[in-house]
Amino acid sequence: MQVKINDLAFVPAEIRVNVGDQVEWVNEDFIDHTATANSGEWDVMVPAGKSGQVQLDHAATITYFCRVHPGMTGTIHVSANR
Image 1: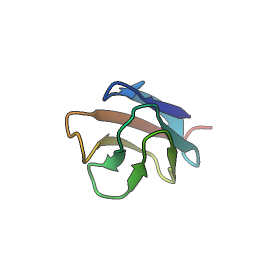
Image 2: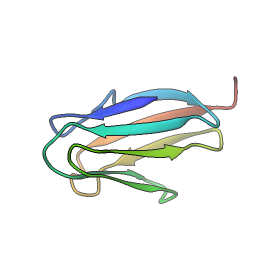
Image 3: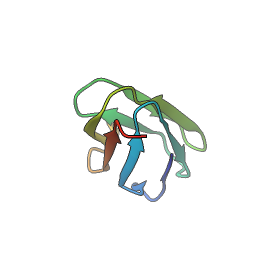
Image 4: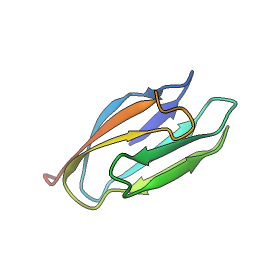
């Protein structure tokens, strides 16, 4: 699943994936961002014009934010159903 970073926002801000899926953030902004789980379980650097990924290995609802711009937030619903 791909999430774009555009105009200081995660687009879409809420996604649904399955256990084992990879989420890729593609930074279309001209400044660096992160995708950082509120729980601290992962912190993905997403430089300007680049992408970053994380593989999700358990069912959960994960909220995340950008450490550089804390107003940027997103939610990932990870389901065990395939």
